Amino acid sequence: MTAGATGDSPAARRRAGVAFVVVSALCFGAMAIMARIAYASGIDTTTLLALRFSIAALVMVAVARLRGAVWPRGRVLAALIGMGALGYAGQAFTFFTALTLAPAGLVALLLYLHPALVAVLSAVLLHERLSTPKVVALVVALAGMALTVLPTLGDGAPAAHPGIASGVAFGVAAAAIYAGYILVGARVGRGVAALPMATLVIGSAALLFAFAAALSGPRWPGTTAGWLAVAGIALVSTVAAITLFFAGLARIGPTQASTLSTVEPLFTVLLAAVVLGETITAVQLAGGVLILAAVVLLARAPRRLEAP
Image (cartoon, rainbow, N blue to C red; front, side, top):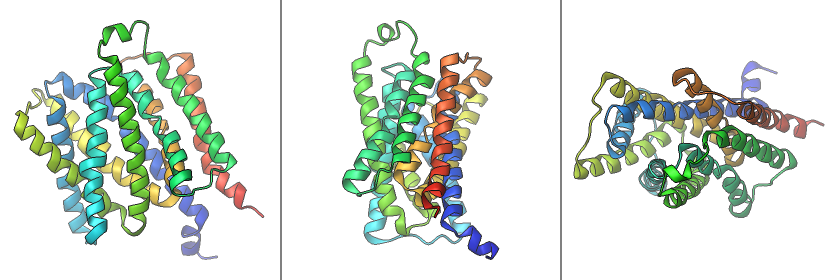
């Protein structure tokens, strides 16, 4: 068998998809840390999202032109614009709004309801078979995610957030919108390369938030660290994260992609310990082990199922 054939084999394609989604989750996981630094510099949510998507869109358009990307047309183009302006922008808005109303750990926990929602919706709408390894990995990953995030809630957190009921509602909405976004991306992205797909999604979100920031009046970062954090959110947690996720989604499907992405809160906790000096409890470490176990299970299960 030639090297090219090996690289194009289903097993190699799945391994690449797993790697893309995991790295994407790590990029997304760094966003919460950089956002805290950006908020400390005086920026508001609308301006942060406008800068995030605008900077990312400029980079993505330049890269797409250099690589001679083929742009979709017609209904596919309209669907991708809708994914950005409604799906991704809607998820970002509800998620960041929830952060202003409820504890960050609770919001993160609610967002990661989306793997379960994707799995159920994929079975109902896309007729994707929920094999035993997928179900087990999903349960293990969600359990690990809960153990990783729950200790961050702390005693008395709800009392410090009088709008927690609204925050929970926005958090659940963010998870539901993201689940729908993943499913639409899996359907629309079948005939579109990851680069133009991500560029159109990011660009559509950029236009929406730039318009909103212009209406409300932007509040710019007041420190160099704040601007660097915004740049990191745009380049690492948006350009790299979204492009890699789409590339992985095309290779392994929505259920595995969304389940693998549960490594994100684990990485956020670890990075917070290193950068912000936050402590990691034994419960969080146990949750991290479960999340990584789910990643290994998903990465290995296809090869076992295909074995003679």
